[in-house]
Length: 122
Ligand SMILES: [Zn+2]
Picture 1 (cartoon, rainbow, N blue to C red):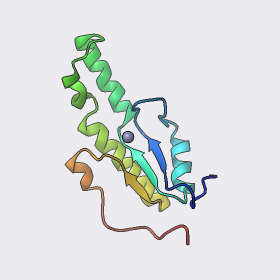
Picture 2: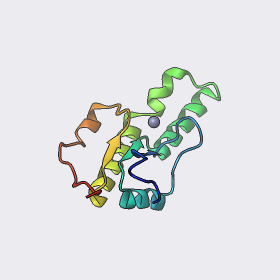
Picture 3: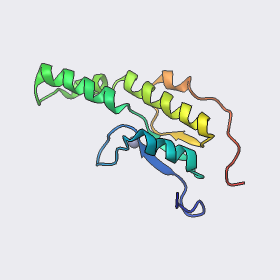
């Protein structure tokens, strides 16, 4: 990875789609980022497969005009927890400094501890 740790504070990684086209779905690419990053990896954690599955369910029910009130059922607790669990396990596996952005469920808090990996910058 080419980012200069003196100039770049971290990488934001989208594990679920948000606004724009920045989703990283390739598991090998995600693993390489966790493995090689010397700067913190900040993740937007929503499991894309779960979001797609839920979107499909609510589109069948409501058509293209899915009520906004279904949003938390589509981008569900399960989608958050699954993605955050994956990010935490990768961070542990590769000793990556991880920052989970806009954590949205209490369950995800249980994934975190105060243990810090050694600083990779020396
Ligand atoms: Zn985000």
